[in-house]
Image (cartoon, rainbow, N blue to C red):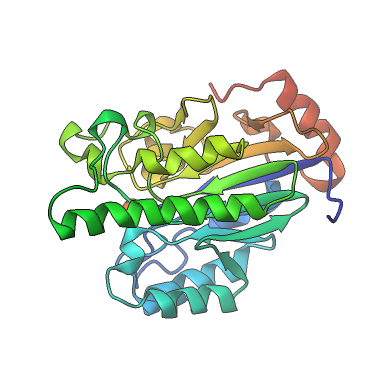
Length: 283
Ligand SMILES: [Fe+2]
Ligand SMILES: [Fe+2]
């Protein structure tokens, strides 16, 4: 395993919903991310209608602004036009690592990503019973969970980060209308996270959900949907920033909530880590 820096900064956002007219929309945000993070996670719904043309607009902004590795998964919107394969190719050709049951390692941190699927949570989760179409629907969530599991099993890093589009727990979709909870995620995605003692999970999709939650095994889950971040942290740029200490297996991710700590990277890494330790709460 290649040795990376002791402290790795992960920026995370999702549901940026780029359209054909979005040129330049998030370029300033991407520039800011490049200044303060070591890797950027984009947890799905990169485009609004899943059109290749939208992907090209996004790639233009990403390549102009982001000089750090980018890793992501597709969201449901990215499938809308049936152009998801072309979309993945456009993003991959631009250097974005798109995960679909795959892994990516950078700076000693391992990422496993899948889109995930819906079906509901806990005792309310839809079961594979009755009509074939229901079984097929449930099978999609089971299949995504299996892909996540086998990707996590391949990571040998001290820290394993899961990237999903759909929520693996109910808590981070709270705030959405109760009627649509079953369409926002699936508990089936939670099992692999516990089995492989994942350090943290990033997801999106629930635009009106809660920014933070935890699995039943206390694994932190972050809903990084752009509208969630705008609503919950109106005084900050709409992305989350986390620190991971790669040398220490026990430590988790530390959200960085203080604007003063942002913009420091590489040479000031030690200072940033110290400050984050003093103020670990995103408030
Ligand atoms: Fe979305
Ligand atoms: Fe979505």
